Image (cartoon, rainbow, N blue to C red; front, side):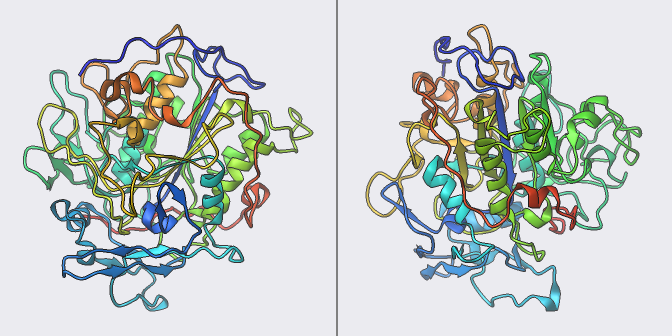
Length: 534
Protein backbone atom coordinates (compact mmCIF):
# COMPACT_ATOMS: atom_id res chain seq x y z
CA UNK A 1 0.00 0.00 0.00
CA UNK A 2 1.07 3.59 -0.54
CA UNK A 3 1.14 6.31 2.05
CA UNK A 4 -1.66 8.85 2.04
CA UNK A 5 -0.83 12.25 0.44
CA UNK A 6 1.12 14.63 2.60
CA UNK A 7 -1.09 16.00 5.37
CA UNK A 8 -1.93 19.70 5.39
CA UNK A 9 -1.20 22.31 7.99
CA UNK A 10 -4.53 22.96 9.71
CA UNK A 11 -4.00 24.82 12.93
CA UNK A 12 -1.24 26.56 14.80
CA UNK A 13 -0.39 25.62 18.37
CA UNK A 14 -1.89 27.37 21.34
CA UNK A 15 -2.33 26.95 25.06
CA UNK A 16 -1.19 28.41 28.33
CA UNK A 17 1.60 25.96 29.05
CA UNK A 18 3.98 25.25 26.17
CA UNK A 19 5.98 22.01 26.09
CA UNK A 20 6.74 22.06 22.37
CA UNK A 21 6.79 25.26 20.42
CA UNK A 22 5.29 24.10 17.15
CA UNK A 23 2.64 21.42 17.04
CA UNK A 24 1.86 21.75 13.41
CA UNK A 25 -1.82 21.00 12.97
CA UNK A 26 -3.59 20.75 16.33
CA UNK A 27 -3.87 22.75 19.54
CA UNK A 28 -2.54 19.73 21.44
CA UNK A 29 0.75 20.19 23.26
CA UNK A 30 0.49 17.37 25.82
CA UNK A 31 -0.44 13.70 25.46
CA UNK A 32 -0.87 11.58 28.60
CA UNK A 33 -0.95 7.80 28.12
CA UNK A 34 -2.38 6.12 31.24
CA UNK A 35 -1.65 2.39 31.21
CA UNK A 36 -3.95 0.33 33.40
CA UNK A 37 -3.72 -3.42 33.91
CA UNK A 38 -5.36 -6.55 32.61
CA UNK A 39 -8.96 -6.12 31.47
CA UNK A 40 -11.10 -6.59 28.34
CA UNK A 41 -14.13 -4.56 27.26
CA UNK A 42 -16.44 -7.50 28.04
CA UNK A 43 -14.99 -7.84 31.52
CA UNK A 44 -14.76 -4.17 32.49
CA UNK A 45 -17.77 -2.69 30.73
CA UNK A 46 -20.22 -5.60 30.74
CA UNK A 47 -21.99 -5.10 27.42
CA UNK A 48 -22.92 -2.61 24.78
CA UNK A 49 -25.26 -2.95 21.84
CA UNK A 50 -26.17 -0.89 18.80
CA UNK A 51 -23.26 1.43 19.53
CA UNK A 52 -24.68 2.68 22.84
CA UNK A 53 -23.34 2.14 26.33
CA UNK A 54 -25.73 0.30 28.57
CA UNK A 55 -25.85 0.69 32.29
CA UNK A 56 -23.25 -1.53 33.99
CA UNK A 57 -24.17 -5.02 35.02
CA UNK A 58 -25.64 -6.33 31.77
CA UNK A 59 -24.88 -10.00 31.21
CA UNK A 60 -23.36 -11.32 28.03
CA UNK A 61 -23.70 -14.97 27.13
CA UNK A 62 -20.72 -16.73 25.60
CA UNK A 63 -22.14 -18.86 22.83
CA UNK A 64 -20.01 -21.91 23.37
CA UNK A 65 -16.74 -22.76 25.04
CA UNK A 66 -14.51 -25.70 24.21
CA UNK A 67 -16.92 -27.95 26.08
CA UNK A 68 -19.67 -26.94 23.66
CA UNK A 69 -21.84 -25.17 26.21
CA UNK A 70 -23.07 -21.61 26.65
CA UNK A 71 -21.64 -19.70 29.57
CA UNK A 72 -23.27 -16.61 31.11
CA UNK A 73 -20.83 -13.98 32.27
CA UNK A 74 -20.86 -13.90 36.06
CA UNK A 75 -20.65 -10.66 38.04
CA UNK A 76 -17.45 -10.29 40.07
CA UNK A 77 -15.91 -7.45 42.07
CA UNK A 78 -13.04 -5.43 40.64
CA UNK A 79 -10.92 -6.59 43.57
CA UNK A 80 -10.87 -10.31 42.87
CA UNK A 81 -8.26 -12.14 44.90
CA UNK A 82 -7.67 -14.63 42.06
CA UNK A 83 -6.07 -14.02 38.73
CA UNK A 84 -6.64 -15.83 35.41
CA UNK A 85 -3.32 -16.76 33.83
CA UNK A 86 -2.49 -14.72 30.75
CA UNK A 87 0.75 -15.87 29.22
CA UNK A 88 0.95 -16.67 25.53
CA UNK A 89 -0.10 -20.28 26.09
CA UNK A 90 -3.25 -19.00 27.82
CA UNK A 91 -3.82 -16.67 24.90
CA UNK A 92 -3.58 -19.64 22.55
CA UNK A 93 -6.06 -21.60 24.67
CA UNK A 94 -8.68 -18.85 24.64
CA UNK A 95 -8.15 -17.97 20.98
CA UNK A 96 -8.39 -21.64 19.90
CA UNK A 97 -7.63 -20.92 16.27
CA UNK A 98 -10.12 -18.08 16.14
CA UNK A 99 -13.05 -19.88 17.77
CA UNK A 100 -12.67 -17.80 20.98
CA UNK A 101 -13.98 -20.71 23.04
CA UNK A 102 -11.06 -21.89 25.14
CA UNK A 103 -11.04 -19.69 28.24
CA UNK A 104 -11.96 -22.67 30.37
CA UNK A 105 -8.53 -24.09 29.49
CA UNK A 106 -6.69 -21.33 31.36
CA UNK A 107 -5.01 -21.81 34.72
CA UNK A 108 -6.19 -19.72 37.64
CA UNK A 109 -3.53 -18.18 39.86
CA UNK A 110 -4.31 -17.76 43.53
CA UNK A 111 -1.48 -15.71 45.04
CA UNK A 112 -3.22 -15.30 48.40
CA UNK A 113 -3.64 -19.04 49.00
CA UNK A 114 -6.12 -19.94 51.74
CA UNK A 115 -7.08 -16.26 52.15
CA UNK A 116 -8.82 -16.39 48.78
CA UNK A 117 -11.85 -18.47 47.89
CA UNK A 118 -11.64 -19.11 44.15
CA UNK A 119 -14.86 -19.93 42.29
CA UNK A 120 -14.72 -23.56 41.14
CA UNK A 121 -15.34 -23.02 37.40
CA UNK A 122 -15.56 -20.47 34.61
CA UNK A 123 -13.43 -17.81 36.33
CA UNK A 124 -12.45 -16.01 33.09
CA UNK A 125 -16.11 -15.66 32.08
CA UNK A 126 -16.93 -12.64 34.22
CA UNK A 127 -17.73 -8.96 34.13
CA UNK A 128 -17.03 -6.43 36.86
CA UNK A 129 -19.89 -5.34 39.07
CA UNK A 130 -20.53 -1.61 39.22
CA UNK A 131 -22.48 -0.39 42.21
CA UNK A 132 -22.42 3.39 42.41
CA UNK A 133 -22.39 3.13 46.20
CA UNK A 134 -19.29 0.93 46.17
CA UNK A 135 -15.95 2.70 46.55
CA UNK A 136 -14.39 0.04 44.32
CA UNK A 137 -16.89 0.45 41.49
CA UNK A 138 -15.82 1.15 37.94
CA UNK A 139 -18.37 3.92 37.44
CA UNK A 140 -15.64 6.53 36.75
CA UNK A 141 -14.68 4.56 33.63
CA UNK A 142 -18.29 4.58 32.44
CA UNK A 143 -18.51 8.32 33.08
CA UNK A 144 -15.34 8.98 31.07
CA UNK A 145 -16.68 6.89 28.19
CA UNK A 146 -20.07 8.57 28.31
CA UNK A 147 -18.59 12.08 28.37
CA UNK A 148 -15.77 11.58 25.87
CA UNK A 149 -14.80 8.62 23.69
CA UNK A 150 -14.49 4.83 23.75
CA UNK A 151 -12.87 2.51 21.20
CA UNK A 152 -14.91 -0.59 20.48
CA UNK A 153 -12.08 -2.20 18.49
CA UNK A 154 -8.85 -1.51 20.36
CA UNK A 155 -6.54 -4.54 20.27
CA UNK A 156 -3.41 -5.15 22.27
CA UNK A 157 -0.70 -5.58 19.66
CA UNK A 158 0.97 -8.56 21.32
CA UNK A 159 -0.51 -11.94 22.21
CA UNK A 160 0.58 -12.14 25.80
CA UNK A 161 1.21 -10.47 29.15
CA UNK A 162 2.41 -7.14 30.51
CA UNK A 163 6.14 -7.09 29.84
CA UNK A 164 5.96 -7.31 26.02
CA UNK A 165 2.80 -5.16 26.04
CA UNK A 166 4.64 -2.29 27.73
CA UNK A 167 7.44 -2.64 25.22
CA UNK A 168 4.95 -2.24 22.36
CA UNK A 169 3.34 0.76 24.07
CA UNK A 170 6.67 2.58 24.49
CA UNK A 171 8.71 1.34 21.55
CA UNK A 172 6.28 -0.11 18.99
CA UNK A 173 7.85 -3.57 19.08
CA UNK A 174 9.03 -6.34 21.37
CA UNK A 175 11.77 -7.49 19.00
CA UNK A 176 15.05 -7.55 20.96
CA UNK A 177 17.08 -5.58 18.41
CA UNK A 178 16.70 -3.64 15.19
CA UNK A 179 17.98 -5.49 12.17
CA UNK A 180 19.96 -3.77 9.42
CA UNK A 181 18.55 -5.69 6.46
CA UNK A 182 15.15 -7.16 7.37
CA UNK A 183 12.55 -7.40 10.10
CA UNK A 184 13.68 -9.32 13.14
CA UNK A 185 12.55 -12.92 13.64
CA UNK A 186 12.04 -12.91 17.41
CA UNK A 187 9.47 -11.11 19.54
CA UNK A 188 9.62 -11.09 23.34
CA UNK A 189 6.40 -12.77 24.39
CA UNK A 190 6.41 -13.57 28.12
CA UNK A 191 7.20 -12.13 31.54
CA UNK A 192 10.64 -12.22 33.16
CA UNK A 193 10.75 -14.98 35.79
CA UNK A 194 10.23 -14.35 39.49
CA UNK A 195 8.47 -11.05 39.14
CA UNK A 196 6.28 -9.43 41.74
CA UNK A 197 6.84 -8.21 45.25
CA UNK A 198 10.17 -9.99 45.78
CA UNK A 199 11.46 -9.70 42.27
CA UNK A 200 13.99 -6.91 42.33
CA UNK A 201 15.05 -5.26 39.10
CA UNK A 202 14.40 -6.45 35.57
CA UNK A 203 15.35 -5.30 32.09
CA UNK A 204 19.00 -4.38 31.53
CA UNK A 205 19.74 -4.55 35.28
CA UNK A 206 18.11 -7.94 35.87
CA UNK A 207 20.12 -10.71 37.44
CA UNK A 208 22.57 -12.22 34.91
CA UNK A 209 20.67 -15.53 34.83
CA UNK A 210 17.37 -13.86 33.77
CA UNK A 211 15.96 -15.19 30.51
CA UNK A 212 12.62 -14.28 28.89
CA UNK A 213 10.92 -16.41 26.26
CA UNK A 214 10.61 -15.02 22.74
CA UNK A 215 8.24 -15.92 19.93
CA UNK A 216 9.81 -17.58 16.90
CA UNK A 217 7.83 -16.11 14.03
CA UNK A 218 8.94 -18.85 11.63
CA UNK A 219 7.01 -21.51 13.59
CA UNK A 220 3.63 -20.26 14.85
CA UNK A 221 3.27 -20.13 18.64
CA UNK A 222 6.72 -21.51 19.31
CA UNK A 223 8.69 -19.85 22.11
CA UNK A 224 12.26 -20.12 23.31
CA UNK A 225 15.13 -17.95 24.45
CA UNK A 226 16.21 -16.80 21.01
CA UNK A 227 18.39 -13.69 21.01
CA UNK A 228 21.50 -13.33 23.17
CA UNK A 229 22.68 -9.72 23.72
CA UNK A 230 26.48 -9.27 23.62
CA UNK A 231 27.99 -10.69 26.78
CA UNK A 232 24.68 -12.01 28.13
CA UNK A 233 22.68 -15.22 27.99
CA UNK A 234 19.97 -15.97 25.41
CA UNK A 235 16.71 -14.24 26.31
CA UNK A 236 18.33 -11.64 28.57
CA UNK A 237 15.82 -8.71 28.63
CA UNK A 238 18.03 -5.83 27.48
CA UNK A 239 17.14 -4.57 24.01
CA UNK A 240 18.78 -2.38 21.38
CA UNK A 241 16.35 -0.56 19.12
CA UNK A 242 14.60 2.78 18.77
CA UNK A 243 11.76 3.94 21.01
CA UNK A 244 9.27 6.79 20.93
CA UNK A 245 11.98 8.79 22.73
CA UNK A 246 14.12 8.39 19.60
CA UNK A 247 11.69 10.61 17.67
CA UNK A 248 10.68 12.94 20.52
CA UNK A 249 14.20 13.92 21.59
CA UNK A 250 15.39 15.29 18.21
CA UNK A 251 12.18 17.34 17.99
CA UNK A 252 12.76 18.80 21.48
CA UNK A 253 9.54 17.23 22.76
CA UNK A 254 9.84 16.53 26.46
CA UNK A 255 8.71 13.17 27.84
CA UNK A 256 8.50 11.33 31.15
CA UNK A 257 7.67 7.80 32.21
CA UNK A 258 5.93 7.72 35.61
CA UNK A 259 6.36 4.39 37.42
CA UNK A 260 6.44 3.11 40.98
CA UNK A 261 10.10 2.10 40.68
CA UNK A 262 12.51 2.78 37.85
CA UNK A 263 13.45 -0.86 37.38
CA UNK A 264 10.15 -2.78 37.58
CA UNK A 265 9.02 -4.65 34.48
CA UNK A 266 6.26 -2.06 33.83
CA UNK A 267 8.95 0.61 33.52
CA UNK A 268 9.54 -0.04 29.82
CA UNK A 269 12.68 2.17 29.51
CA UNK A 270 14.64 -0.12 31.87
CA UNK A 271 14.75 -2.76 29.12
CA UNK A 272 16.23 -0.37 26.52
CA UNK A 273 20.02 -0.42 26.56
CA UNK A 274 20.52 3.10 25.14
CA UNK A 275 18.23 4.63 27.79
CA UNK A 276 19.20 2.56 30.83
CA UNK A 277 22.96 2.47 30.04
CA UNK A 278 23.54 -0.37 32.52
CA UNK A 279 26.70 -0.25 34.58
CA UNK A 280 27.18 -4.00 33.94
CA UNK A 281 26.47 -5.26 30.44
CA UNK A 282 25.84 -8.86 31.46
CA UNK A 283 23.17 -8.01 34.05
CA UNK A 284 22.86 -6.60 37.53
CA UNK A 285 24.21 -3.17 38.36
CA UNK A 286 22.26 0.04 37.88
CA UNK A 287 20.95 2.28 35.09
CA UNK A 288 23.38 5.14 34.63
CA UNK A 289 21.75 6.92 31.68
CA UNK A 290 21.23 10.64 32.32
CA UNK A 291 17.98 10.72 30.35
CA UNK A 292 16.74 7.58 32.11
CA UNK A 293 17.37 9.00 35.56
CA UNK A 294 15.78 12.35 34.76
CA UNK A 295 12.79 11.09 32.76
CA UNK A 296 11.75 7.89 34.55
CA UNK A 297 9.92 9.49 37.48
CA UNK A 298 8.97 7.71 40.71
CA UNK A 299 6.50 7.29 42.25
CA UNK A 300 3.80 7.41 39.60
CA UNK A 301 1.81 10.00 41.55
CA UNK A 302 4.46 12.41 40.28
CA UNK A 303 2.17 12.97 37.27
CA UNK A 304 -0.22 14.79 39.62
CA UNK A 305 2.61 16.84 41.10
CA UNK A 306 3.77 17.89 37.64
CA UNK A 307 0.24 18.89 36.61
CA UNK A 308 -0.13 20.94 39.80
CA UNK A 309 3.29 22.57 39.37
CA UNK A 310 2.86 23.41 35.67
CA UNK A 311 5.62 20.98 34.75
CA UNK A 312 3.73 18.53 32.55
CA UNK A 313 5.97 17.24 29.73
CA UNK A 314 4.90 16.93 26.13
CA UNK A 315 4.35 13.17 26.41
CA UNK A 316 3.64 11.26 29.62
CA UNK A 317 3.44 7.49 30.11
CA UNK A 318 1.80 6.66 33.45
CA UNK A 319 1.90 3.26 35.17
CA UNK A 320 -0.16 2.65 38.35
CA UNK A 321 0.85 1.49 41.78
CA UNK A 322 -0.42 -1.97 42.69
CA UNK A 323 -3.00 -0.41 45.00
CA UNK A 324 -4.58 1.48 42.11
CA UNK A 325 -4.02 -1.08 39.41
CA UNK A 326 -6.97 -2.99 37.95
CA UNK A 327 -4.93 -6.21 38.02
CA UNK A 328 -6.70 -9.01 39.88
CA UNK A 329 -5.19 -11.45 42.27
CA UNK A 330 -3.16 -9.64 44.90
CA UNK A 331 -5.79 -8.17 47.17
CA UNK A 332 -5.72 -4.89 45.26
CA UNK A 333 -7.32 -1.91 46.94
CA UNK A 334 -9.55 -1.22 43.95
CA UNK A 335 -8.51 2.41 43.63
CA UNK A 336 -7.86 2.12 39.87
CA UNK A 337 -10.96 3.94 38.54
CA UNK A 338 -10.40 6.77 41.04
CA UNK A 339 -6.72 6.99 40.08
CA UNK A 340 -7.60 7.46 36.42
CA UNK A 341 -10.35 9.93 37.31
CA UNK A 342 -7.91 11.91 39.47
CA UNK A 343 -5.58 12.46 36.51
CA UNK A 344 -8.44 13.31 34.15
CA UNK A 345 -9.98 15.74 36.66
CA UNK A 346 -6.65 17.40 37.38
CA UNK A 347 -6.33 18.15 33.67
CA UNK A 348 -9.93 19.27 33.22
CA UNK A 349 -10.40 21.19 36.48
CA UNK A 350 -6.87 22.22 37.39
CA UNK A 351 -5.11 21.77 40.73
CA UNK A 352 -4.43 24.42 43.34
CA UNK A 353 -1.45 24.59 45.65
CA UNK A 354 1.42 25.79 43.48
CA UNK A 355 3.08 29.17 42.92
CA UNK A 356 2.67 28.86 39.15
CA UNK A 357 -1.09 28.36 39.42
CA UNK A 358 -2.28 29.40 42.90
CA UNK A 359 -5.97 29.43 41.95
CA UNK A 360 -5.78 26.03 40.28
CA UNK A 361 -7.16 27.08 36.90
CA UNK A 362 -7.36 24.32 34.27
CA UNK A 363 -4.32 25.44 32.26
CA UNK A 364 -4.00 22.10 30.46
CA UNK A 365 -7.57 21.29 29.42
CA UNK A 366 -7.52 23.02 26.03
CA UNK A 367 -4.15 21.59 24.95
CA UNK A 368 -4.04 18.04 26.32
CA UNK A 369 -5.28 14.62 25.22
CA UNK A 370 -5.54 11.82 27.79
CA UNK A 371 -5.49 8.26 26.43
CA UNK A 372 -6.42 5.50 28.89
CA UNK A 373 -5.73 1.92 27.87
CA UNK A 374 -5.09 -1.46 29.49
CA UNK A 375 -1.84 -3.30 28.80
CA UNK A 376 -3.35 -6.75 28.20
CA UNK A 377 -6.52 -8.80 28.51
CA UNK A 378 -5.48 -10.34 31.85
CA UNK A 379 -6.95 -13.75 31.08
CA UNK A 380 -10.54 -12.43 31.12
CA UNK A 381 -12.86 -13.49 28.33
CA UNK A 382 -13.67 -11.29 25.35
CA UNK A 383 -15.96 -12.47 22.56
CA UNK A 384 -14.42 -10.52 19.64
CA UNK A 385 -11.77 -12.47 17.78
CA UNK A 386 -8.71 -10.35 16.94
CA UNK A 387 -7.79 -9.86 13.28
CA UNK A 388 -5.50 -12.66 12.16
CA UNK A 389 -2.68 -11.31 10.00
CA UNK A 390 -0.87 -14.64 10.00
CA UNK A 391 2.78 -15.39 10.56
CA UNK A 392 4.34 -13.89 7.45
CA UNK A 393 8.08 -13.36 7.64
CA UNK A 394 9.53 -10.07 6.54
CA UNK A 395 6.47 -7.90 7.22
CA UNK A 396 7.15 -6.71 10.75
CA UNK A 397 3.61 -7.78 11.70
CA UNK A 398 4.43 -11.13 13.25
CA UNK A 399 3.03 -11.77 16.73
CA UNK A 400 -0.16 -9.71 16.25
CA UNK A 401 -2.95 -9.23 17.27
CA UNK A 402 -3.91 -9.93 20.87
CA UNK A 403 -7.40 -9.57 22.33
CA UNK A 404 -9.37 -6.37 22.73
CA UNK A 405 -8.55 -3.99 25.56
CA UNK A 406 -10.45 -0.82 26.46
CA UNK A 407 -9.35 2.58 25.19
CA UNK A 408 -10.79 5.82 26.58
CA UNK A 409 -10.01 9.06 24.72
CA UNK A 410 -10.38 12.30 26.72
CA UNK A 411 -10.13 15.68 25.02
CA UNK A 412 -11.71 19.13 24.78
CA UNK A 413 -12.03 18.38 21.06
CA UNK A 414 -14.00 15.12 21.20
CA UNK A 415 -15.99 14.73 18.01
CA UNK A 416 -19.14 14.17 20.09
CA UNK A 417 -20.24 13.21 23.56
CA UNK A 418 -20.11 9.46 24.26
CA UNK A 419 -18.47 8.79 20.90
CA UNK A 420 -17.91 5.10 20.18
CA UNK A 421 -15.27 4.36 17.56
CA UNK A 422 -16.38 1.34 15.55
CA UNK A 423 -19.82 1.20 17.09
CA UNK A 424 -21.74 -1.99 16.45
CA UNK A 425 -23.68 -1.58 13.25
CA UNK A 426 -26.51 -4.10 13.37
CA UNK A 427 -28.03 -6.47 15.88
CA UNK A 428 -26.79 -7.51 19.30
CA UNK A 429 -23.48 -8.94 18.09
CA UNK A 430 -20.56 -6.98 16.63
CA UNK A 431 -19.02 -7.34 13.23
CA UNK A 432 -15.38 -8.35 13.10
CA UNK A 433 -13.06 -5.37 12.98
CA UNK A 434 -13.20 -4.57 9.25
CA UNK A 435 -9.55 -3.82 8.50
CA UNK A 436 -10.14 -3.94 4.76
CA UNK A 437 -13.14 -1.59 4.57
CA UNK A 438 -13.18 0.69 7.64
CA UNK A 439 -9.71 0.58 9.22
CA UNK A 440 -10.18 4.05 10.73
CA UNK A 441 -12.30 2.40 13.44
CA UNK A 442 -9.69 -0.27 14.27
CA UNK A 443 -6.94 0.61 16.74
CA UNK A 444 -3.95 -0.96 18.49
CA UNK A 445 -1.00 0.13 20.64
CA UNK A 446 0.68 1.47 17.52
CA UNK A 447 -2.24 3.88 17.10
CA UNK A 448 -1.18 5.68 20.28
CA UNK A 449 2.38 6.10 19.02
CA UNK A 450 1.25 7.21 15.56
CA UNK A 451 -1.03 9.81 17.16
CA UNK A 452 1.87 11.17 19.21
CA UNK A 453 4.03 11.45 16.07
CA UNK A 454 1.27 13.38 14.33
CA UNK A 455 0.53 15.78 17.17
CA UNK A 456 4.15 16.82 17.63
CA UNK A 457 5.06 17.08 13.97
CA UNK A 458 6.01 20.39 12.38
CA UNK A 459 6.56 21.93 8.98
CA UNK A 460 3.58 20.10 7.52
CA UNK A 461 4.90 16.65 8.42
CA UNK A 462 4.51 14.29 11.38
CA UNK A 463 7.53 13.23 13.37
CA UNK A 464 9.61 10.42 11.94
CA UNK A 465 8.51 6.82 12.36
CA UNK A 466 10.21 5.04 15.22
CA UNK A 467 11.91 2.74 12.72
CA UNK A 468 11.82 4.42 9.30
CA UNK A 469 13.34 1.52 7.31
CA UNK A 470 11.78 -1.60 8.86
CA UNK A 471 8.62 -0.34 10.46
CA UNK A 472 7.19 -0.87 13.94
CA UNK A 473 3.61 -0.76 15.22
CA UNK A 474 3.34 3.04 14.90
CA UNK A 475 3.60 2.85 11.10
CA UNK A 476 1.71 -0.45 10.80
CA UNK A 477 -1.31 0.46 12.97
CA UNK A 478 -4.58 -0.30 11.16
CA UNK A 479 -5.72 3.34 11.42
CA UNK A 480 -2.35 4.83 10.41
CA UNK A 481 -2.08 6.45 6.94
CA UNK A 482 -0.07 3.52 5.54
CA UNK A 483 -2.98 1.13 6.02
CA UNK A 484 -5.93 3.53 5.96
CA UNK A 485 -5.13 6.12 3.29
CA UNK A 486 -7.08 9.36 3.03
CA UNK A 487 -9.63 8.22 5.62
CA UNK A 488 -6.93 8.47 8.28
CA UNK A 489 -4.67 11.54 8.30
CA UNK A 490 -3.40 10.12 11.60
CA UNK A 491 -4.31 7.33 14.00
CA UNK A 492 -7.31 7.92 16.30
CA UNK A 493 -8.42 10.71 13.94
CA UNK A 494 -12.08 9.72 14.15
CA UNK A 495 -12.14 10.79 17.83
CA UNK A 496 -11.29 14.44 17.22
CA UNK A 497 -12.50 17.66 15.64
CA UNK A 498 -9.63 20.08 16.23
CA UNK A 499 -11.32 22.90 14.33
CA UNK A 500 -14.13 23.21 16.90
CA UNK A 501 -14.20 25.36 20.01
CA UNK A 502 -13.07 23.43 23.10
CA UNK A 503 -15.79 21.57 24.94
CA UNK A 504 -16.41 22.44 28.57
CA UNK A 505 -14.98 19.85 30.94
CA UNK A 506 -17.41 17.68 32.88
CA UNK A 507 -16.05 16.43 36.19
CA UNK A 508 -15.72 12.68 36.72
CA UNK A 509 -17.17 11.61 40.08
CA UNK A 510 -14.96 9.25 42.05
CA UNK A 511 -14.57 8.27 45.71
CA UNK A 512 -10.89 9.27 45.88
CA UNK A 513 -9.32 12.43 44.49
CA UNK A 514 -5.84 13.66 43.54
CA UNK A 515 -4.99 14.65 47.13
CA UNK A 516 -5.64 11.09 48.23
CA UNK A 517 -3.07 9.71 45.79
CA UNK A 518 -0.53 12.46 46.45
CA UNK A 519 -0.71 11.67 50.17
CA UNK A 520 -0.96 7.88 49.82
CA UNK A 521 1.44 6.06 52.18
CA UNK A 522 0.73 2.41 51.41
CA UNK A 523 3.15 1.87 48.49
CA UNK A 524 4.90 1.41 46.29
CA UNK A 525 3.65 -2.02 45.25
CA UNK A 526 4.25 -3.53 41.83
CA UNK A 527 1.01 -3.42 39.84
CA UNK A 528 1.36 -7.07 38.84
CA UNK A 529 2.34 -10.16 40.81
CA UNK A 530 2.16 -12.85 38.15
CA UNK A 531 4.54 -15.75 38.30
CA UNK A 532 6.58 -16.44 35.18
CA UNK A 533 3.99 -16.65 32.40
CA UNK A 534 5.70 -19.35 30.38
